[in-house]
Image (cartoon, rainbow, N blue to C red; front, side, top):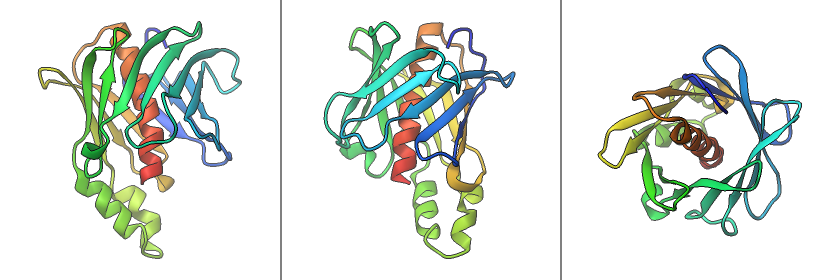
Length: 198
């Protein structure tokens, strides 16, 4: 995922049995194909350069068995850890909160859900017959990355769509390539976890 230009779009494939999606850049070029192995006790995510799975570029693995406060390590194609994302357990029950950690195991960024009520309304109204089918168009949560000074860096927003299948990442402040890579990988893992939560 070198020289990526924002915005980045994530589009989930709803016709496959696996939990997978494609990431495209502003020019519509595929920058990653993300595939989650199903029926695993520990999260196991593979990130390829395209849907043909020609080259495996990254792996994301949980550091422990399924748990709402697990951390997920990002490794490059050579198996070198380049960072991780950790879910802030109890703090995330009402409003999603994650921490992005760099390759030196230092906290670098926070990712927070901007409005928890959107998810609550989506969940409640999603249970109502007929109306439930339209909640993907009505309620679209957003998440923002902030640095340690509280400045907003990147925002991810769910786009109106059936089955919550489209998301867009927008850069709010310029960031260097290593950080960009870590932030995008963090959002890739986070979107898989948050879609499962509703």
